[in-house]
Amino acid sequence: MDETECWLALARAPGLHAGHLQAAGASAAAARLVGLAASELLGRGIPEAAAQWLARPDRGLLHSDRRWLDSAGAQLIGCESERFPPLLAQIASAPVALYVLGRAETLLSAQLAIVGSRNPTVGGARTAREFAEFLASAGLVITSGLALGIDASAHEGALAGRGVTVAVLGCGLDEVYPPENRGLATRILTQGGALLSEFPPGTPPRRENFPRRNRLISGLSLGTLVVEAARQSGSLITARLAAEQGREVFAIPGSIHNPLARGCHELLRQGAKLVETAADILSELKIPFSKQDITESPSGAATRPGSAPGLDKDYEILLDALGFEPQSIDALVDRTGLPSPSVASMLLILELEGRVGLHPGGRYVRVS
Image 1 (tube, rainbow, N blue to C red):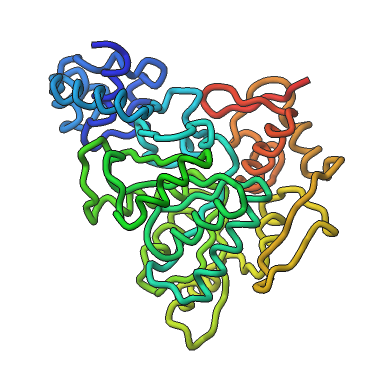
Image 2 (image 1 turned 180 degrees about the vertical axis):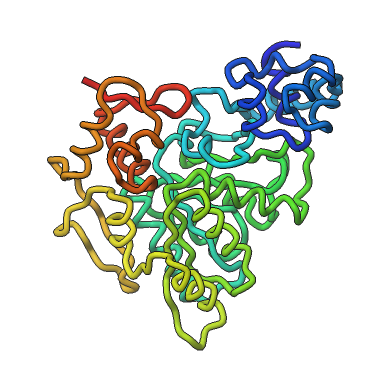
């Protein structure tokens, strides 16, 4: 069994996540776990169901997965790979691997999640599209779940802004769900974006898959923007997960007479950042933009950031703390006293400017 098939086996192991591999002391050579005796795997802290599977994986199923990867042009990115998104690697129960269609390098870029109701108002759908369009034109990758409603509007807006967008699915990538968005999925790939899932091919879109999908949407992103959501909306789950992951949560207020504004108002009462323009988001994420470059759309959403020629004080503090030895985001938060989401955002901007480099394990180093 080669390394790819070993990772396919790990990706299918029930209940297994990246933290188990780290606890087993195998994060740098996880593929070596495949084929070990179940008793040894249990002794290393691997859950029982996963241990039983890894001891004797179904070779026929793994060969089928391999054929699908080859035929679809898909990639499987293990959690120990340099191509695994570093922000996602930091969350609790990070996935063992990701199945990706499209440009996998997109996952390493600065992302903002935009989520909301599957049945939005006309104004809500327009707002999501406009925010996504201008934030994508600012260089942020727009990440959402390909669902009908706000998700689809966010993807559409990013494409309209000639930007890039990522769709996270709650099923295997051999199926696009919902089927109404197959054309949208194709355009996402054509314009340089990506579709991704932690679920193996052949996994149907079961209800229980979507909370797991939501933790990936928030985990990939610097922050999550909720546009419209009822009080019992799944979008509030994504927002709660974002807060638990130490990421920013943004919410757009609405009319007190609109039931779809109540979820956003609840988030605001819980401490989410109130958003009126896209400039508010760029400012909170410390993404440089010039005030004179702001242009207003009819909804007040739009901003086109320019390049800031110098670094502000927080960026200088971060670079001084970084030095020339690889450091984790947690270590930099301790050294600088800056919020974790801000540090993550600033590192991505500095990486894009060529001032810092990303090392394996999600560690950053200053580039001389």
